[in-house]
Image (cartoon, rainbow, N blue to C red; front, side, top):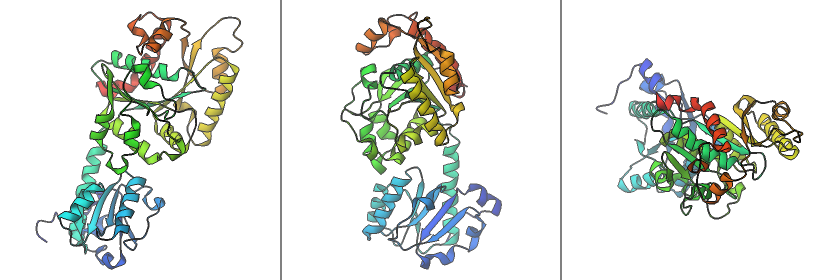
Length: 394
């Protein structure tokens, strides 16, 4: 074949992503030939075109070369299942006699790169390295930091703190930044009400999009809620939490991180595999609690759950909301820190007037007064998270 990129061993190894080639045994004779033999990070798996692929086979794979026969429904079903399992993974379709109809079908399944069957070792090597270089370039683009907000109990005020903190982070930044707030409380989320934005377009549209989900779809669903503030609201309808696909949620968060400068996640109070996965991927976890026995007990259970699934305590920042220092308060802020074994990063004083009015009207309390005790607590909290925007502002 003419015009094939010729690579040295050093070039090939450095340009290749961690790759798996899955195809029928009849095509595998080319695997050890030519430049392909120089790629040290390629796994070869012989499977019939309609055989299923286990998630374990794809655990650390960045690029998959997969045999696809557009005339056999089972191979397209296998491709769709793989894209659902790993929506972030690049797929090169290995196709015999590809035509425009086949290409259109592959595009609908999220495949944009094709290599011909039977394999030509040099052609396959060049294709793997081209896509690998593209992946390496995209991975060099910094992703936005994320903070997951967790309330110890219902009505802990975590959503209100998230909304006000996002505004404070944007205002305190040295240059304009964009902050995305994602309401993952799919059954009781109130972020749209706090910011008074329409939730007819919501995260539900992205969850049901499956492999059609992309950056453009995210942009169409996210709603601007103020200078630098963008909200992806929870749906109007109640969604069964156990039916939510973890990979799809992680894909939504990853797209938001690539689009915005800071991403804040409002988490549900009920814990599932997908919500734990999201929290585990966050840079920081903000646990909002109060100075009461019931809040303290639940906060300790949450911290213990995090420990059981491998989330380190030093990722957890505790915020004591509605803080008071009266002598009648039997649990002090220091008691909270000692019981949970983590630092209390902020105490936010209780506001009995302006904050409630602001929430009812879908406004920020700062629209009434910057000297409000709640607003002052948020300003201090934002200053302690200033490192989240350092890379953005540089």
